[in-house]
Structures are given as structure tokens and as C-alpha cells.
Image (cartoon, rainbow, N blue to C red; front, side, top):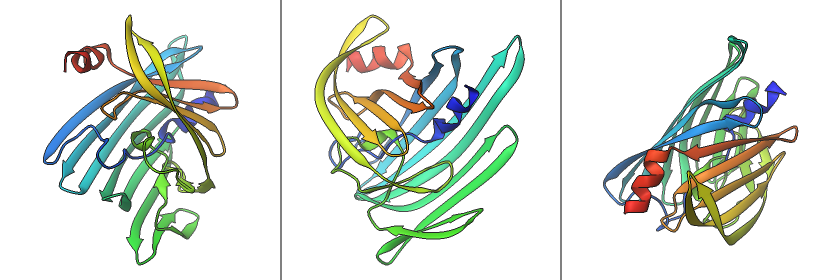
Amino acid sequence: MLKACGLIVCAFLLAGAGAGPAAAGTRQTYTYRVEHPRYGDIGTYVDTVEQNGDSRRIDTRLRVAVKVLGIVMFREEADRTELWRGNRLVGFDGVTVTNGERVEVHGKAQGNGFVITTPTGTTVAPANVYPSEPWAAGMANPVVMMSTKSGKLFPVKASGADQAVVSLYGAQVPVRHYQFQTDKHQDVWMNSRGIPVRFRTEEDGTPIDFVLTPEQVAQLGAQ
């Protein structure tokens, strides 16, 4: 039951060229509420996206705690940085601490591959590997995904881009709905500007939702 929160750092991809939320030379921060179907609001997930020409940096900060009768039953904190050049991931550094257990994942583009270092060893992934992140549902279908939490590689099946409407705090937001299947099922709902307004990931059949804050939804509606 509480294991369901452990995936929270494992979501989706980076946004496709021309579809991302940040124009050249800009820096934007997006804050999501993390919602558990039984325990309600359990924390925050914050992405800061900085774009300079064809280079992009994404800094992610996750803070989650599940409490029962005031006692913390589960805690997960994560910080990670992705560096992209065009559509290629060129650098990754992530630290996840789950109930006191720390896992570091580091990656760097080398030649025709991407070298991933974890506590269990070193793996060479294909050059077109993507981390499990919510920002690039609009990119060409990925073949391999890297877990941002463990560094493990998974084949991925992507589908979707279906037009839909999601209800956020009483507002009806037109989106495209993308789905990804790795070792788990994941969804992302992206608005016309390429911003994930909501995304979801499942562990053991439990859906965990990440939803933009009401203030940011209102701000996007005004733009």
C-alpha cells in the first residue's frame, strides 16, 4: 500500500523540440501536488525548466510523506538534474532517499551510448535513452526508459496523443493524453503549450496523481 509512493520519482520524459514550456533563454518553475487515493495530499513535486538555445536543464525536487494518526509511515525525498542537448540526454544526477535509504544515480553521454552508474554497477544504455519524466510525451516514441530512482532500464511501449479534456479545480482544460507502459502503467495529460498539467503513475494498482497547483492552472488559463 505505502509502496505505491516509491515510484514517485519515476514518471515520464522530456518535452519534444518546439513543444516545451520554456522558450530559449527562459526559466520556468512548475509545482505539482502529489495525491494518493487513500491518504490525500502527500507532498509536492517541483520541476524547474531552463532553456538556452538547444540546451535544456531540468531540476526536479520531490518531497513526500505519508502519515497515519500523525506518524510518518513513509517518506521519500528526491533531487535530480537532467541536461539535454537537442533531443539527447547528455547528463543525469539524481539522489533518492526512501525511508532513510539513499540511492544515487549518475549518467553521462559517451560516444554512441549513455553510461549509467548506480550502487549496483555501471550500465551502457543506447544514446536515445530517456529518463522516466513527464516532460516529453510529445516526442518520438522512446524505445528504452531509465528509472530516475534506480537507474534500471526498461523497454517502453508508448501510445496516445488522444485529444481529451481534464477538469482541474473547476476549469475544463483541453489536453492530449499520452500513455506509457514499462514495468508499470503511466499517463500524462499535456496542454497545447506542451506543459504537463497532470500526470499519473501506478504501483501495485494504486494510482498516484501529480496535479499542477490551482495558482498555476489559473495562470496558464490567463496566458
